[in-house]
Length: 459
Image 1: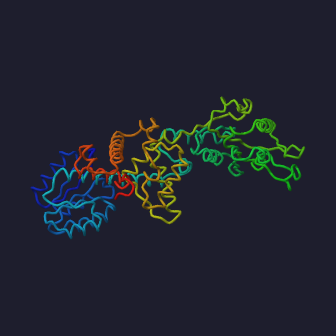
Image 2 (image 1 turned 30 degrees about the horizontal axis):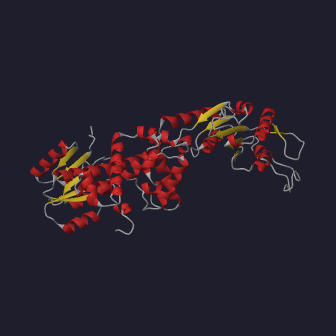
Image 3 (image 1 turned 90 degrees about the horizontal axis):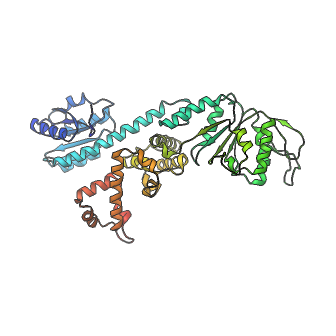
């Protein structure tokens, strides 16, 4: 069973060095497989190898550089840390260019080696998590490809949609702005017997009050000053299919009365006409507020629409879905614009699950597109000040694993100290009682840039 610290494949031809290194790593919580030559090590490197490679450079037969090249051919992006007792600077530069994660000189400080392996192991776990997310997305089909998520809430929503789609009843969808109410309505339509007919959406809050009646019911030529010709309304266009009324809570009271009559009688009347036209449609309404308690919404219309309800949870209540959703939209944008897909870093993952997502899936999608198109952008910069949002999201904080909460707290403390001292590293070291190397390593780990905290004009 793999320990929490990670898995290490250790390769060194010197028995005493190998045994001492293995013992130290095991004491530090790592699972270690040790080999005395490169050929033996390669037998342990399969495509699903979840650890990192730690190898000496100077070895008989295949040396560490050759082992790294072959290992990364078998396991792309495998983090490789190389050890040497020869102080070969040119070799170190060459190794880093060839893709080594780090290069440590013997005799090494055990604590530094362990910290480097910890960081490399975290990177490997992120690689595997990104791969898992991509594989998960690739194996999805049907409604799973449209309502993406692994949380119990989204799984229940998919099940409810599948159940209600075939019942041909009116439905109210509740959800905050950006949660995907129109997507849910579209899924209801596509899974219903009406799927071959029109799905007709209209945002009741986006159409001026003077025009919405014409938008819904249509008009005859000459019905009003600008009505030059007959116009088919949304009701008529949705005949046989589904009419989706988004933000129905904003519908004017007089129009609510006319809509109720049309739903009761199954007919409509265009503006400027006396003819009743039969329509057969399903109405799916969506609202941000509870229509039953909304004093501006008619009770009789509410009961006509409220045959069934669906509730879409906000993104902050299903944070386990965030990395999967973000990866989906990021990869889709990268493919659409011919860009390479980016690999999410530890900092990116921490930012994703720590963000409150007030704009829900719409905000996440837009952020993922910007992240995919700008290969240099940091996620934390695209979102802005993380702490302000996270502090107002107790549900999100509660869902975070302990390690992420600790890391987020540590990053916030360092950022606050840098801000307080306007980027003065010495002052931050004194305040936090940290040595320079440790502070630098943590700033790199959390993606914290001193330049962001300097007083104007300083460098």
